[in-house]
Image 1 (tube, helix red, strand yellow):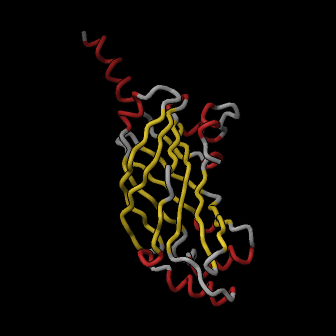
Image 2 (cartoon, rainbow, N blue to C red; image 1 turned 180 degrees about the vertical axis):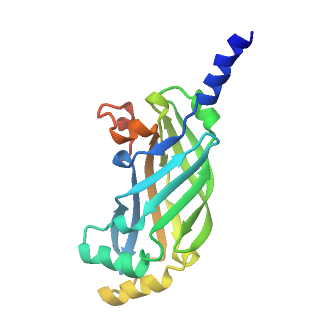
Image 3 (cartoon, rainbow, N blue to C red; image 1 turned 45 degrees about the vertical axis):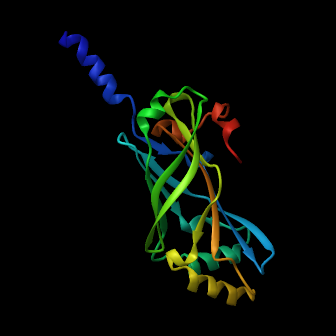
Length: 207
C-alpha cells in the first residue's frame, strides 16, 4: 500500500510547479488625457513575476521601460514622474486559486475578481481587478483585464511629478486618474524563455 501511495503523494506535490511571467507575450498599458481632449496610450516594455504553489502572485513592472513612443517624454516620466532612480519598480501582489486552475480544461475561460495591492512610488494602495483567466497547454495560463483599472495619482504621490510634466511640456492639464490594462502569461520557467508560436494562447490575447 505504501508503494502505491508514495507516487500519488509525489504527483500531488508536483501538480502545480512555480510559474514565471513570460514577458515576450505579456503587456501592460496605461492611458492619459492631456489638455482635456487628447487621449494617448503608453506601455511598459519589461514585466516580470511569478505564481508559487500556494497561489501567491507577483507582477513587477520595470518603470524604466516606459514607452510613450516619444523619447523625451519617456525620459521626463522616468525622472520626474516615476523617479526611477529611487523607485525603479512597481509591484502588484495578489493571490490566485491555483487548485481551481489545475482543474480547468485547456482553453477554458473563467472570470474572477482579484484583490491585491499595488506598491508604486513608495506608496501602497489596495486594488481590485476584474480579470479573465485562460488555461493553456503545459499548465500555463493567461490573466487579462476585462475592464481598465483606474489608478489615482494622489494615492501614489504622483501629483508633483504630473505638475512638473505639465510645466516642461507647456500643457494645460493631464488627467490624474490613470486607466491601466494588462495581459500576462504564466508558464513553467524553461517554457517562458521560448514561447511556442502556435500556442492556443495566442487567440485569447487582447493585443
